[in-house]
Image (cartoon, rainbow, N blue to C red; front, side, top):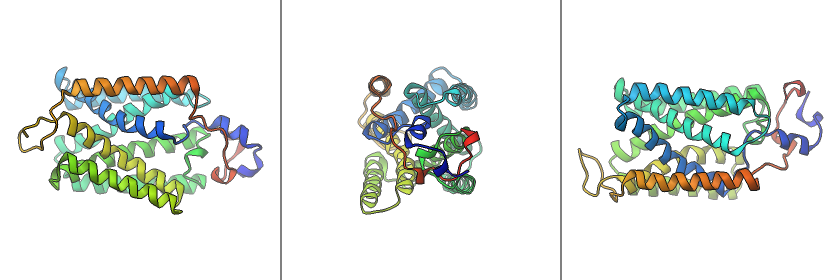
Amino acid sequence: MTSSQLGSRTLHSALVKVPQVTAFFWIIKVLATTVGETFADYLNSTLGFGLTKTTYVISALLVAILVIQFRKSTYVPWVYWLVVILISVAGTLVTDNLTDNFGVPLTTTTIIFSICLAITFVVWYKSEGTLSIHSVITRKREAFYWMAILFTFALGTASGDLVNEKFAIGYGKGLIVFGGLILLTSVGFRLGVNAVLSFWIAYILTRPLGASLGDLLTQPKIAEDGGFPGMGIDKYIINGVFAVVIVALVAYLQIAKPDVITEVDVTELGDIDASTI
């Protein structure tokens, strides 16, 4: 059965498990990147868990909240964004484990995760006929969605570290580079570039953008161990502020629901069996 046979747009929009892409979406996404990294650092360094144990803890928390997310029948802001924060940390830890524990070069991890993401998109499209986030109305599509999100964070971490550190441009210039690429993506979308392609490109780029912003604000003014200088603001102050902003925005979304998808074009739904909904 095709999507055009399933019924009204209102029915489909009520089933979409992800938020509308608004300014709130991108702000929380960028801030969550920095907050997530700080939480991982807290477990890794401050509590002395180490990289491996931190990975186990984050993975367990991610699985638990994903179970809650999959059991929900509609988009629930606090659950969705908690998954995003935890999966951002998990994606970062995947890259860090490969680099720090196994000595895999950043160029190699960037290529690996690019391939993994491409394969995910190909399989997703061949299976469902669409990559639109508006089509995420079944558990199968949601599984593809979260798999893609995981690889975007892993890829964003690898490529961001590669550009900022290995290519030695520093955090400030990295912020400009990734911000500029996002701006170009936005301009391309306005000029007619495919909306789904534009979304996923921007989603990948916001990961290194957020990391560059966080590092620029928190790294010491005088570079240590061959690193790059930052503004020297205590990372717990910055991330405490970011966390408060995230909680406030998510609370607003939970109450006011400005990012709930209210209309879905059936052409975005691809081919879908009504029995899977």
